[in-house]
Image (cartoon, rainbow, N blue to C red; front, side):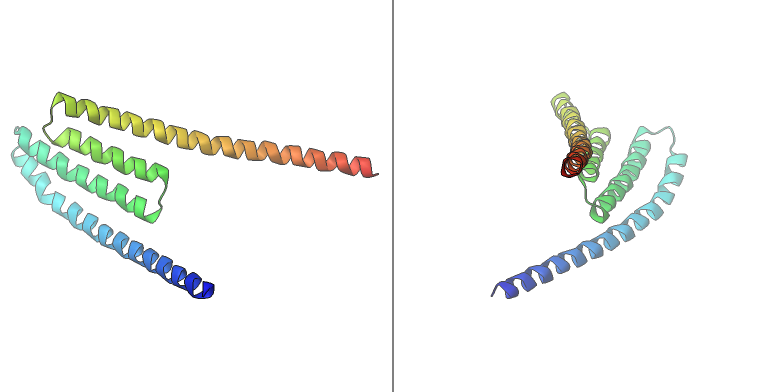
Length: 152
């Protein structure tokens, strides 16, 4: 029975990985289409270069491609850094493109600050673990060396 459960878990895991790859391909295709769709928007921006609304629409389209690209990176290589980057870009895009109240802007700035702090702490935690691991290896080597001297 346990063998069946292990095989079922393996099949479900592999299926999940396959779906992830298919979604990454779909997002890649969507990013290419979005980039192609930017070309007419550049022309439109040039024709209406004094219009702030045209610039805002162009910026929104560019930020959408950037968010899509970051999302693709997150799908391809999931990590804390990639997830926080996607969230930061999403919040930034919303803040830049959309009309929002002062309170909403404050909450978005605070959200971005919290994401930066969390990312910093995660990276610092990894560094601490890495350094501690190296320190531990040196202590173990020294102890082994001391034990070898005592045995002689």
